[in-house]
Image 1 (cartoon, rainbow, N blue to C red):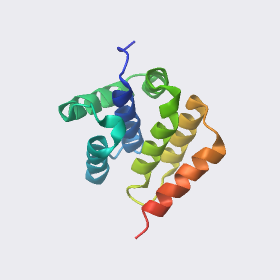
Image 2 (image 1 turned 90 degrees about the vertical axis):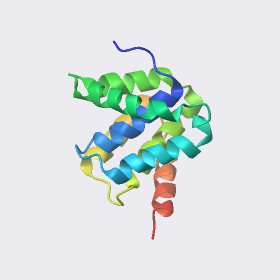
Image 3 (image 1 turned 45 degrees about the vertical axis):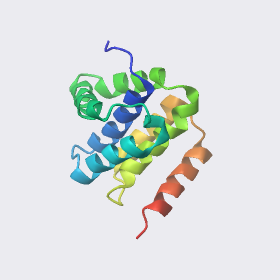
Length: 136
């Protein structure tokens, strides 16, 4: 099993998983991951030079047998409970970048919600907030 993750690495993995779930990581999604990792307080002590290696690690783990399940478990183990909703919100933000959420993205959101034991109403509120932020 891979080494334990920091909470920042776990959050990066969540965003990369969401970007990769439809097998097409767009430039816009990758730009958003970079931007969020630079501006959010949860990443204050995260080394920006680590972003690409962590993203590559995500891709490697996802390509392995049972990779998604393993990565979801690593994320759950690495995150303190206070960051479970943050992880979900970051996943939703990446899913919403292209303003259309695909079936694969919805499935991953459900898996993440269940793995982290999040309340469905809280998740609905997070999703609604992202929808409002992405309007043109």
